[in-house]
Image 1: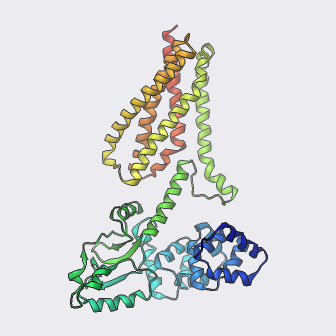
Image 2 (image 1 turned 90 degrees about the vertical axis):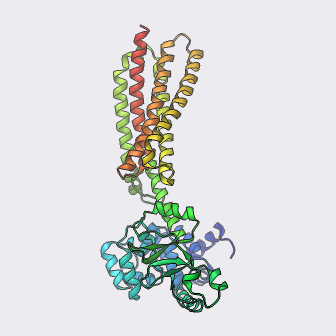
Length: 453
């Protein structure tokens, strides 16, 4: 398959503009669903619906739906009735089907489920909908190969062939007992190389890595990385095999969470995309901008009370941006380290005190370097103003210490309160450090200047 390029997208766009159904049908039949989804993303809704309806293969249509971003998929689904959506769900794996149904309104969900022809799949979907989408239960599918531990090699091979007919991919062969409790995994190599008289339980790999359905996606990602797995079995509280999670499903969810965290850290309160409406983007951005305005008003009030000192020594005003900027930068750096550590599991709440102590040492070193550099600059440029030199350097020292500790403590506190710590890496840290930094500067400057009077 040749690489799908922007030139190919432009060509299909041109054919869509010309309503060339014959050529488009021929091209779509040869394209991968992900490539068709890429074309749909650049079309208007009306064009996207027209193009989607030209896909002749129903399975390809269903796959295209799942390759689309959630917003694009929702727009296409809004133009379909419950029966059409139910027909697509019949063609999807249960994990994808659950993802699609979760995007529908509660009322539409029930109607769609009623139109699923495969009663068994409909039952599986209803069961999976009870789990949170960010857990193993919400991400798992029920399509996998499962054999009994007491089977012989020929029996197991026959059973595997029978089950494989309904599967798109085979990751592992799970071995269970008569109660469906997970006992092991049968590698294909052992299936092929061991004598036919051997029983599965004598050649299987025992104690496979498994997870419970309420395991959060962050822990799943760590397990996949640690054990280098392509898929992972999900078991219930008594060890019965109930599903399988694939690596790509976990990574998709991790990517979505990372995007949400990045937006939250940037001061965007809800999940928005570049193609969302002006109103939606404004609504998502405004809250933190308003908080920034409040922070600015507080700063102006602080400076108003410092007006007489600034009037006496105007050089003090020159360093106000430096104080605020340094505090914001230091705080964001400290919080970013903590948030990253919490996300990848290298930092636990149990070791919070050690991390705070470490950050204090780092802050002390940074504070000394920064304050000395600024002191040297002031000695060179303002040799007649030792009070300004001392006020600025001492203030910077204190601001760096405060911002580092604050940037470390806040995400740890948010994590303990079960609030996304990514909130602490954005405007919240910067605004707080601006206000507190200015208070420190005003207080230190007032005190130092009084010593020189």
